[in-house]
Amino acid sequence: MANEEIKDAVSLLLIDKATGKILSASRRFKPDNKNLPGGKVDLGETFEEAAIRECFEETGLKITNLKLFFEALCPGGSDGISYYTHTYTADFDIGAPLLAEANTVVGWITWKELLNPANSFAWYNHKLFEHWIDTEKLQRWTTKDEQHETN
Image (tube, rainbow, N blue to C red; front, side, top):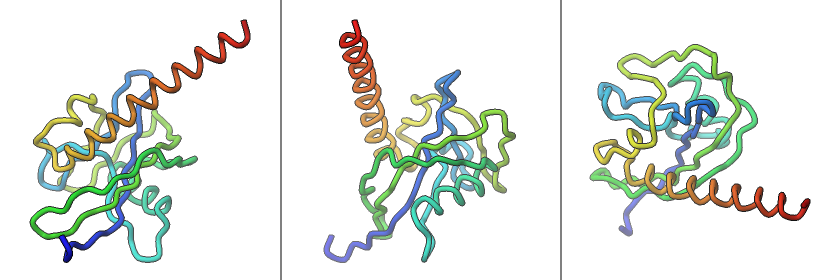
């Protein structure tokens, strides 16, 4: 691992609040390999700028009000490159049309589909899901505590 190269990447966790589905973009030429929109951070780009650019390139959605949600190091593959991935949530127009890059598929999927072990980033998606579950529980507990304090 001493020769391992680490680069930065970004992804976006965009959830349709009405259905609970997650925006996904397939890998190029692999329509069944569904993952979060995202990609590598270009030289001179902030993580937020990269997330905005990647989301628009891969889905056609314009996003605002980005919030860092989760970060983790994704172990490298046979190429020896690992990616420290920064995942953001953001505001978006749910009614906006989705536009896929050539040879990709964009759409709304369930957590189960995102967690498919055949997906390229299954390990990271599982870590992200665990964090999302913990965050949801914390929000519910905080809301219950606040309601209890006002009664």
